[in-house]
Image 1: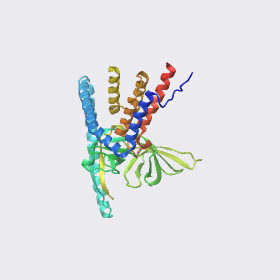
Image 2: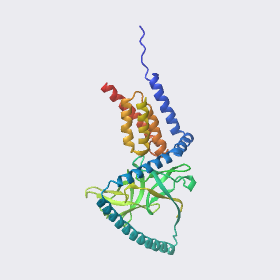
Image 3: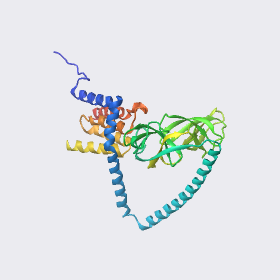
Image 4: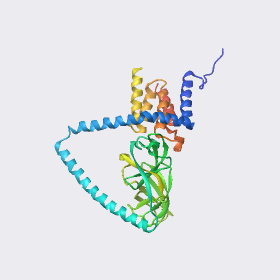
Length: 264
Length: 82
């Protein structure tokens, strides 16, 4: 009697599995194929995300009808207070901006940049890569390597892939990403490691004067990366661990600014 | 077949509108309840095309590699439970 050993690689089912995997892996690894498929996917996905937003806002306006009047009045008051506070902050910020511009002009360090506002199609919560997908692409002059900022000053990442109508942004806080930063008012230099979802960790010599709430800026561009949320250290150890995070909820970002051809 | 197509549609919507870990859980149940649920590989690749890039971790192939792991894991669980 002849026994035929089952060959795991030649079972009909496994051939189908290997074929699908091979084709998909080839499309992902071979750059021209990947670009072509990505362009095709993005031709449709923008509309799909748009339809999702539309459905979400329709649902919100539907559920609003069932909310109690008191809740709506309370919410309205809170929102009005928020708007007033933000208007004051904007005025303050504009004054500061003018002062900084004057000072930079005095010292001969005039900065100019060309920015494009882009709306977020998919946030980092959806992606396993800690990336953002925005609706500005080569049509608006976006290129790979452009820096992305939020609310005017906080740098959040850089463009890693561009299609005609969209771009992918790798967040600086992506796990494993390393950045040179300056921490606090004394600009203590450190290497920050991304921890995902807007969180970072850095090591500084023990005894460094860093407080919770200190600003952290990138060494290269001088843009705000985050604020210190925790300092963990022991006198017996040579280094203290500094944890900092972006000063806003990264999952709630709706629009960003992409700095095109920054002139330093 | 209708059930499977409906589940595929749900999984497709999940790729666009829900976090990646939820897609992974759905895919796991897909492999568990349907025979030869190879679509999971295609959905993994779709995640990479939508959110990944070659310069990112695992060369932007975390989705497809994750889908193979989900497939293997669910197939193993299926074998044990049977």
